[in-house]
Image 1 (cartoon, rainbow, N blue to C red):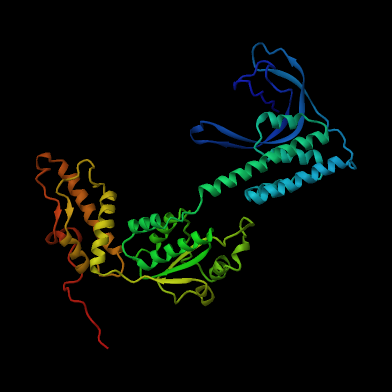
Image 2 (cartoon, rainbow, N blue to C red):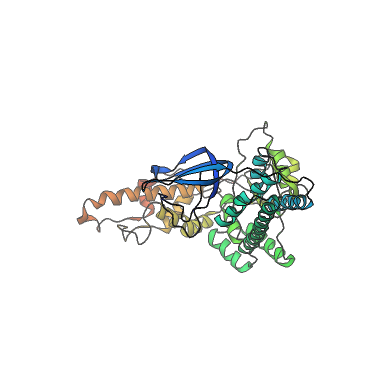
Length: 432
């Protein structure tokens, strides 16, 4: 059983008198006990059984307070009372409104509606108050109220406050997540994150321009098609950042026909269907008509026709030699240095450490001729990992630390990445 303290009462582990203690409480059973890490605290899940009140206080000799209690009988109510019916209907309507604004309430409602009699106005009032974020005194007021009509009224007042709070939260969320229609800022972000990819960047800027003119965001389905390693997935993250949107990634690779992922995606991506898309796991309707979907694929041959028809294809070609060198200098080398613990300014980083332009060109021509830059990135990371090992080994002999040269020139590449895969700079041209 439990009796809560009044708002002005300080939290104490030991209660020795009735000062600041409410005389009406709840008799409850422990339904679940959750222990936190290191046994620092525990959380109890209690299920209320009945209301109780304090009848008498027993001598406790400065120990814990001992009291006699009795159950509070719930008075009968007039089923024909129009005010009770009106308040009950208003509470049900308010609960439905809250579910619309916050779908997470739906699961809560379904769980308890199967376990309680919501047709009983007393229980309905208790349930309505329990789902609100009212403070302790407001909830205690509902607990102590025995008159059916008054309890319903107090519960409805709490629900009304909860609806107003949900509206304010929704308004704040819309302001915080207000779409970024600044084309200049978006272009700077896209250019800072990726070299090249002109077609993709142009399409995103067009998307922002149209949204700015319409004053609202429209949903689109873009499919980036290209060989591995050209930046299809990473550009998706940059698109989200440039639009000030949340980025979520999910992969359908490896899903078999038994789950029929194509049909599920068709419902998800089809503009005529996704306005009323229903998540069958949560059983919650979701409007996806304003979501920007960015799909990626290496080839389009395996994409079903109906699904492909709903996508706007943007094909990404591979990078040529100069583009790979530029990408390596601007993105891959700084990233690899940071991942290897060799970022400029870090402790023990040799002042002579550098990967020369000629070395990067040799990597592109003689080691990494793939269309993308993933293999080039792996080679650069491999080089700096080996350099990191040499730096750590060299620390044991501080007298030679500054004498060691960590400038990686073309003639040293074989030491870090082995013999070149391609021994000739001449590319084979097929003539037809």
